[in-house]
Image (tube, rainbow, N blue to C red; front, side, top):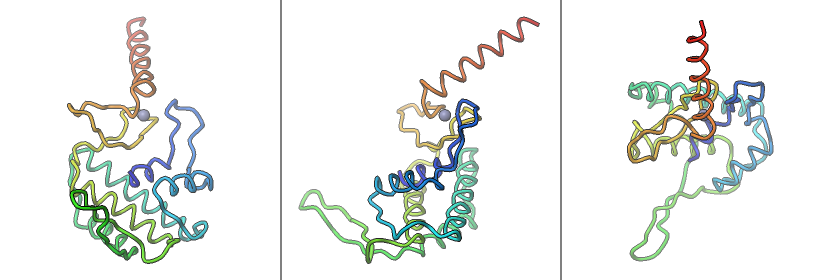
Length: 184
Ligand SMILES: [Zn+2]
């Protein structure tokens, strides 16, 4: 989804090393991300637009953190999201054919400006808030990782972004911690 990809652009080295990086600053990452979501944008963000993107990301991560801990979105949160949504006027069109109609959101013109990209991100998050299950939003349990994802498992048991990576790493860490304490 657009919103969690956006949050995960603030990449943390899940092994606890020094490979953390802000992927919004990487032109290649931006191009690929926008391409995957079929967004064609007018050039690179200006310094001010980049600052706004990062403020938005910090706000969204803070909101997700609160939701993960069982709080609800506040009036201020909704106001902020609505302000961001207002940056992207769109046209809605019915596409598909009988039996498989879809309501498709299109932009007035492409390429789009950065405020419209932010509106799209806000809309993708709003969709989860309205149609999804907030209790399925997760932040990886590895404190070095903090990857944000939507838990699609039947029994809602997904504690790590990836069981083979963060899951195993945390298992090894717990094992070592136990071993250490039994040696004392
Ligand atoms: Zn992880």
